[in-house]
Amino acid sequence: MSARDHIAAGFGWREHPGDGPVLVALHGIGSEARAFDPLAAALPGWRVLAWEAPGYGPSEALAQDWPTAVDYAEALEAFLDARGLTRVHLLGHSLGTLIGAAFARTHPERIETLTLASCAQGGSASPGHLPEKQAARLDDLQRLGAPEFARTRAPRLVFQPESHPDLVANVTEGMAKIKLPGYAQAVRMLASGNLSADCAALSVPTAVVVGAEDVVTPPEQSRAAHAAIQAAHRGALTLIPGAGHALHQQAPEALAAVLKTHAAKGVTP
Image (cartoon, rainbow, N blue to C red; front, side, top):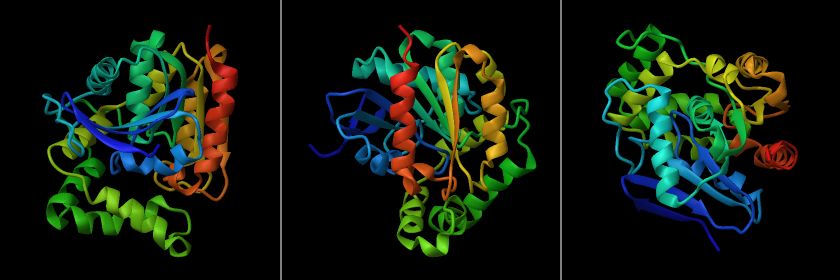
């Protein structure tokens, strides 16, 4: 059975059916559910649901102008409830790591395993104060428009983009779909997030993986998140060679191998 796009109860998502483990995937700030198609193909038999985050695709934006990671985690709870999913393997990529860690911290009983990929640490900024780097994102989007914004930024997500034009085109296509207010809410959440603080409070099996050539969220950020996890819950830290930030698209088989190993070793009773 092939993947299908769904819309229900204010959420959009893309589902790859399967009778095996259930994986819920949370995309990054400039991405979409379809970005996980290559990963799902590398996980035959798994049921993979990739949500469209609030304010992305057909999903309704959050009510808060300046949401926190916990606000997105509450939306994820509603998404899982509506799908009848009580306990899942959870994968967060980039901005999705902040959401995934916040959800796993507040709802550990619903997590089989947590995998944090290409960790976005967050800026720990006070709500209402948008740092210059994050403010520039919104300025660029409004000045350039989404298609040109994506064209200028997407190549940085791919290692050796000149050698992977089709991959760059796919990443660009996904990023070109961002819109307001969803993107602005995500930028503000990123600015105020603190991934290491959430990781320190985790009580579920948690693995961390990052592309060795990631220049968007360099490996140092993933190492910091991994180090913050308590030893009793800390899974492997994996660097994937030859992969940049969009490792789920550039190295889906390697990421799938991490997920399979973590699922086999890390499930709590």
